[in-house]
Every structure is written in C-alpha cells, then in structure tokens.
Length: 407
Image 1: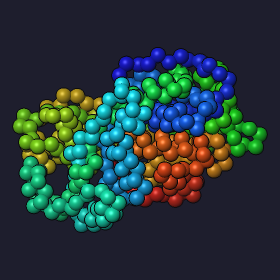
Image 2: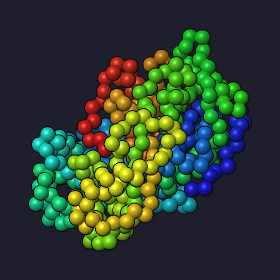
Image 3: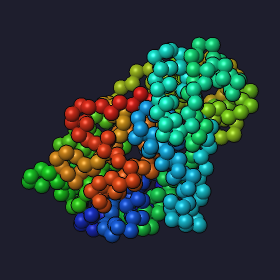
Image 4: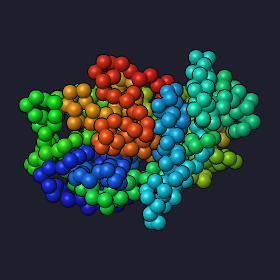
C-alpha cells in the first residue's frame, strides 16, 4: 500500500471530532461518522505514520470468527461477516468499490484435555443459539473431514464453516480511509503530544501537536492502537493496554494439502491456516510475553525452527517438508485486564472516547466498532448493537469481561 500524502498541519483551529490514530479503527470511525447524514461537523484524523508500515492493521492475519464465548463478541463478528459480504452496498453502492469475498474455510479449535473440551462444548451451545454454524467433532469426525490432521492426542474439535475465515481487510481499510476523506474527513501526518483539560477536569478542550499547533475539539477519540495508554496518559487517564509481539510466517509445503486448511488453533498455542491457493500461514506468541517497545519488530527465527515448525509438523505430518517464504512480527494492542476492547466515554472526562485494546481482534471487530462509536458521538448512545459491556468503567472497577476463546 503506497503512503498517502497527508499534510502536517490542520486546516482549522477547532474540530467537532478529533480521532487520534488513522489505521483500521480510526478510519472505520471516520467513515461511519462522515457517511452518516446526521453528521455535518468537522472531523480531523491524526496519524503519526501514514505509511502504516508497522501498524497492527498492516500486520494482521485478516480473519473473522464467531467462535467466542460471549454473546457480544459473537454478535460483533456476525455483523462483520454481513458487512464484508455486502461491502459495496454498505459503502453506498459506489460502482468503484470492489466486492469483498469471505473465504469461509472456518476455524478449528482442537482440545487435548477435558477442561478445554468442556469450554468448547459450552461455547458451541451459545454460538449455535445465536445462529452460528459451530459443530463439535470427535477425533474420528475430524479425520473424516480433514484426513491430514494427526488426532491421537485429541478429545474433540470445534469447527464452523459458516461466515468464518479470511477476507481482504486491507481493501476494507483502504476504502474506508479513501471514502472518509472524500466526504470531508481531514487526515494529517502528525502526533498528539499533549492534552489540555478544562478547569473542572471533565472535558478535553485542546490537544497540542508535535509541530506545535493547538487544536480544540468537541469530542476526542483514542484510536491509537498499541500506543493507546501513552496517549490516554496525556489526560491523566490510565489504560492497561500495551504492545505485545506476535510472529507470523508464510510457508509453502513440498506436499500441499488436498483441501483448504481451516484456521487451526492447536492445543500448543500456535495457529495456522490456508494462505491463498497453495501456501499457508502460521502464527505464535513468543515463549515469554512481556510488553514490547513500540519500535521492536525484530523477528525470532529460533522460535520457528525450535518450536513452531515441529508443532506444525506434529499436527499435520505433510508439513514436515516446508519452506518459509516470508515472515514478520507485529504488535497486539493487548488489554492486560481481559483481552477485550475498551469502548465508549471515560467516566470523568466525558468527551474522551476509547476505541482501544482489541488484543488481536481489531480488524475483525472494526465494522461494529466504527458504527457504534459513530452512534455514540452522534446520539449519545449505541443504537444498532449495545457495546456497553466494553465500557471504561469495568477497567476502573477491575471487573473483567470474561472471554475464554482467545488466540
């Protein structure tokens, strides 16, 4: 993706809405706001790196699943699937907007112990009650459907071929950004380095940019990805969000599989999936998982050789002879409390709105989040889907939103 030409300086001294962070979440909000006929205000998006080279958006695995353990996360993903399959219509029927496809190879969660198997059974009942196509497979049923798996250590699998899989998130992002700008959203290449509150401390009045300008705002939205806590701290706000490194490898197999590989979540913690027609993708956290420096994107080749590859080959014996063709490291915006998003207004600074902490779910949750935050800005409440479970209040109260289906 070529870097857009954003100016450094804002055109106006005041904006009705300022969004800090112009990647997938910030651009989703910008699109849903600017395309809403009830919004006639000014909108500024501040992006520190318009190349998006190291943004989580650019280093995502770009998939969507309904196999969560909470109703709200399932509902969010169901809207994403609907949105992707009807992308052109949601973008206003513009003939230049491409159709998006959802390659529904599904997710396959594998359980090798009874405790996790029980979680998957419970989750499947909830998912099915909400219309998801999740089914529980015995080891024999797994092999019957996917003969390439080694299943001797498994108790069961949980699989869904309905609206789960890969879609071109980069295309969705590009069109949100392009269309928001066309509708009047102003994007600048800059960084917010300070926030000035009013005397009562209940509103963010102005922000200071790295180039020295001060901009006043009606609503200030934090969409700063892994830097969310750093930005919030400028207003004296604490967020339990930090960058965590995740590694991805693309590989080809000497003996390719005869059918698509579902996004497989192995009991070991690694995951792998089909990547295009004949290649595959694998992902893994590091052995130890501390917060990473913002500029640390160094890869760990020993992790692949000594840990990931042996586990892949053990689960899919045809992957004993494979070749890595590309790889990268990216950052999750990791919520230490419960791995779920933080959405909505701060409990005291009432015009400071969070859209943070997605912990790897940002791209797949971006349509519902963009729509919801736009509703909150315009109407003071969520309309289409209630996202209040993700409120900042639970952060203050150390009250986790329990989600057991985390990758």
